[in-house]
Image (cartoon, rainbow, N blue to C red; front, side, top):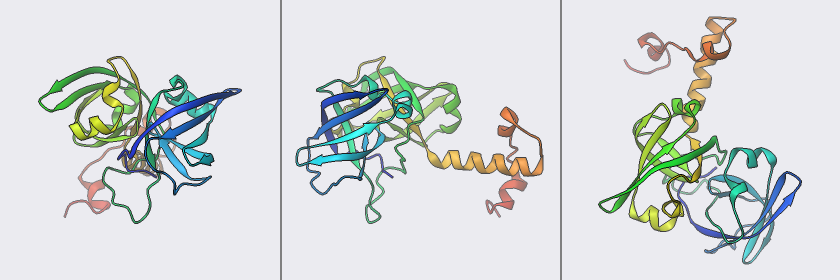
Amino acid sequence: MFTGIIEGLGEIKEIRRLGQDLRLKIAPQFDISDCRVGDSVAVNGVCLTITEFKTKAFSADVSLETVSRSTLAGLNQGSLVNLERALRLSDRLGGHLVAGHVDGIGKILTKEQRQGSWFLRVEIDPGLSRYTIEKGSIAIDGISLTINQCGPDFFEVNIIPQTGKSTILLDKPIGSPVNIETDMIGKYIEKFLITENKSRQPGLSGTQDRNVKIDRAMLLKYGFGD
């Protein structure tokens, strides 16, 4: 589990193809000497397991499933990546709960400087838009961000100077692909409501499952309101 607060950058030192899988060797640009083999680290928002660890670099394997759902296949030797070590129970949760399980790939549509910050509009698959809400949380390349506005196939965020300096996001030009992870809380709520709807109306399937009626009676039943 991660917070979406990037700790620093890493440089891709080596990429090895193992059939359809990948093995990455990454040199962090900050101290991770407390890591060990088996630890989790988020690389551009993708949760990977350290398989080999040395003082100045670590290696991690990337499965075909992860390759197919993320931008890691597009990395090259010398590429910089966002890094975050796994959350400890004693840490502050500065961003939001990020699993490191990428939902899909988005594309930067707009990138504009506005005063000291930057405005980004990112295109996403319409299937992910149901998990985006105004002022909700989303992770782009592992960075926890707040959604300003969203639509059927896009969302908009602002990048403050500190985030811009400490990540690679603003180095990416318009049209660049980015890893997207939506807020897991929304996905759990959807699953809960679908299950509840099925229990009351057996036989529903497919898109019907998502036609859950959220009314005052349901909210009161689960403790919302008075």
